[in-house]
Image 1 (tube, helix red, strand yellow):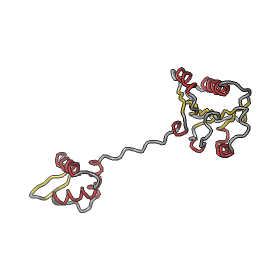
Image 2 (spheres, rainbow, N blue to C red):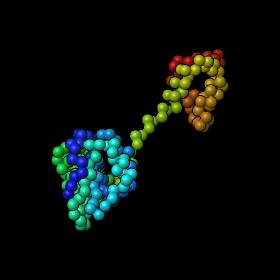
Image 3 (cartoon, one colour):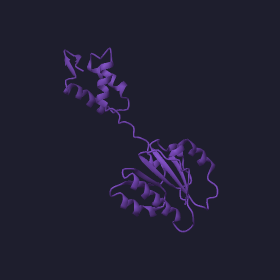
Image 4 (cartoon, rainbow, N blue to C red):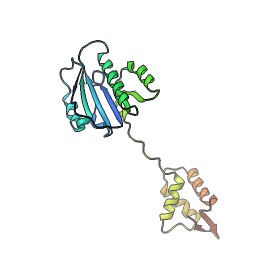
Length: 200
């Protein structure tokens, strides 16, 4: 087997091992900066995809091409398994991802998961999912924030109901009423002589 690009790779938190015989269409621009990449290809793959080679350039020393020497059933898979074991022996805490749709890797992955962080993924989207958006502030918290910012707060119940309707047009009437009731229940709003006062 031959390794192309033997420059010492930087230490990172993750290693992505790509089965290029099994998954050809990949976008290396999706690879986070904390990840090293090893791309495995066979001797029958005479020509590497030009787009992939161009995408690989910015990864620099974080990327290594591994051309397997020889042919045979699962030859490339055995190479990946070897390098996977070597990486984990050097860095037991390293997270390793095998990019392949070949389920033959799964028994090995299950074995390694007892003590290591390993998994097989079918796409880079599975490997590096987009971070989840922060949960939206709940309606009551947002209402309090809007009331605090409001310079001319409604002095009548009807005006408060109208203001909440304009702020929360997507809520049902019962949901808006629930917000108003909570304001009174928590003494954020009080009514005296038909006039509202606020304690925000």
